[in-house]
Length: 154
Image 1 (tube, rainbow, N blue to C red):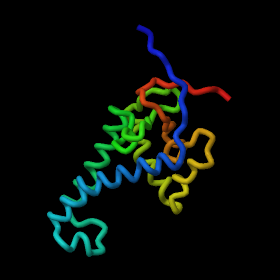
Image 2 (image 1 turned 135 degrees about the vertical axis):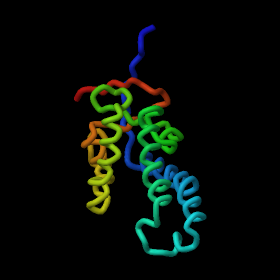
Image 3 (image 1 turned 30 degrees about the horizontal axis):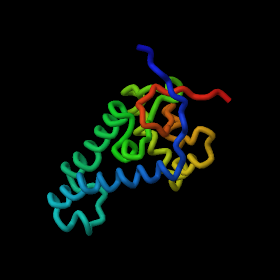
C-alpha cells in the first residue's frame, strides 16, 4: 500500500500559543505541584531559581525528556496533539530524529532570550516558524494525520 502524502498547512502564532498554554497547565499540575509538596511553602514564596535535586529532576530534566519523547513519538506535545498540530522535519515532512528534537528543545533558549522575540517570529515567517524551528529545521503543521507531509514549492 502506498503512503499518501498530504500538503502541509503551517500552524500560526495563535493556535501554537494556545497549545503552549495547554502544555503549561499540564506541566504545572504534573510537576510544580508535587515539587511544592516536597519543598513546602518556601517553594511557592521563595526567590531561589533552584531548590534542590528534586526540583531540577522534576521541573527541568523530566519535562525535557518527555517533550523530546512526545515530539519524536507523537509529533507534538499534549497541547499540540489536542489542537491537531504536528511538529515535523522541514525538509522531509516526517517525524523528527532524536538529534533534531534535542536541537529544537535547546533552541528554545535563543527564542526566549531577547524578550521572547523568537516566538513572536512565527507571525512574520512565511512558514510560520519560530527561531527554534528555523535553527532545528522544523515546522509545525495543522493536520489530523501523522503525515508524512509535503510542502508546496513557491
